[in-house]
Image (cartoon, rainbow, N blue to C red; front, side, top):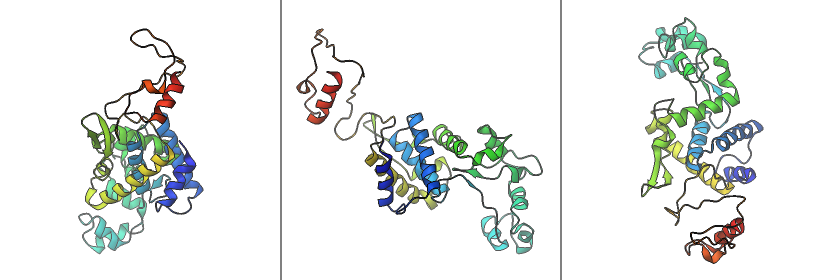
Length: 275
């Protein structure tokens, strides 16, 4: 993967003419994890889209902002704060607010659990039960560490640990064999059910990241198929200088011996690989 090409493509796609060092660090952490896990191009684009959206483009773990005015509290939690009088004790009081709105639910049992297990991360996890899912119940502050936040993001989106929805639920298959596209807007359900409000944004981000990854030459664990090679699987075995065919012939492979539908440049590369 050519990371310089990736960042250049992002800059051309309205992600800003310049990226801060912290943004790049966040992108690098996600890209490294994707390569380690052999994440497919489509799935990585979806992961990047969510991380970008959830962090407001910062690409760094964030902590839930619980500093609201009384009137804003009435808008965000109208059932809990129906009047100004009910909201005022919690206005501009993040700790009290967290314990009020999260206390006694999401696995929270202690008097200060709402605050201790407030939202943190690239995709914020909230509540003792959710922190426990990712092994962080005893050390919730670790959710703000970059490496931990990246792990939580990938584990949650891949395994369906956030909402029950996972990355593979939104693959689009071509003839039931190879992924041809991805439903980025619908994949918002992996993190949150607010598809009507944010699905279009996730679609836009996902397509932009997909294009940038393609320009960078990212491969990941990309499935076979797409643009004329549906159903064709080519197995490359590095270190094999000759190919043994059914008749026992072990002579060097020539480009003309590959299927005619392969472009000559690809056939030549395969011939050099095997021959």
